[in-house]
Image (tube, rainbow, N blue to C red):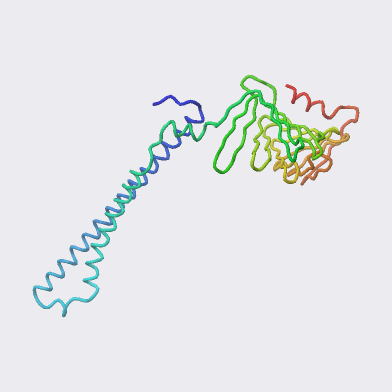
Length: 274
């Protein structure tokens, strides 16, 4: 067995082989069923031919045989021919399939570019819109999408950070996450893992999944999220907020009040700086 470069490649390699084994089993079962059908068709054809010859030896076939008997004989030969063509087609398809190699697996999984300690800025119409920093970045260029995966470097506890700026270039909010996907063509990012977004006014949004798009300049969480603002902590689902967190909408929310003497952003800062 060849040495595989990563657990992901090894898992893909095993998955393809298991799928190949299941397909082979299905083809074997289908082949057996077709052979049974072929034997029955040949048996019926032979019986029909014998009956035809027997009646022909005694009297004129046109007087004794119906029109469907000759048709049945031709159908028998047509079924056998179709079965033979099926096997030829299947063998041709199998021959045309390229073999699965380690190189092909690597080409589908490996990034096109890989960088460390990345400091990336995104501008729109000459104004700064995003500032992304990460210890490790993988860039993938696919026919349908070009995106980057930003994550911490191995052994590094510094989290991925995105600074969001408004259309005038002023700071709106900062987002910390375990990993962030940035899609170049759509100009959007998707943050995953212990996501914390903080506005310049101190409003904090916490979730496991958060998205931002340049098109509408909105922050969204498809699942559970909490908002901490002015001594009030609100929880709910499917949050939609302005990128500066000045307005936010939550579905199925409940509010919990805590002491105004406590700093609601202290726990968030501790997690982001760990």
